[in-house]
Image (cartoon, rainbow over all chains, first blue to last red):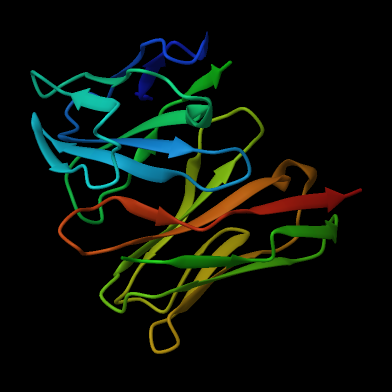
Length: 114
Length: 113
């Protein structure tokens, strides 16, 4: 069955460096989400896209984080500059539509900032 | 915004016994409540969900109940097996203009042989 793809799976960087994560949702899924999961906690929403438009980025630290989904398919999440507190798992999820449609998660990118 | 509380944080049961995980939510407008299972190093996977127009839903050994008045919902796993060991997350949709899930902090379920 189709799955959400993410890369890289692991990323180690030094603070103040720039990092980027990529997500390819399930084909035909219009809605895409980026979540951040700190070890031992549940995922927290960073940004939501409907096609190429941002629906909600109220929890995205916009001074250092940016996200785009230019053609309404795959998406990139960028952090510049990275800080120690950004170490976490970054999960991408997609759903066919909005509301109560099931969200399917990718395998995540584990970021470690040294 | 929505707030989801989940208990217990760790639950250890004997293989074959039942396990119950409980969650409460704050926003009475929330109307979709999924449960995800996350094994170590793997992606969260949906195991069951319930919508607010339903009080209970079952899928083989797994069931979820919802009490809208009290704003709480529970996951029930019967006849637990070693492969049930994982972290379980409850979540709720907060209808504040977007559809991002609000998750609880998770329950680490340990099945003792």
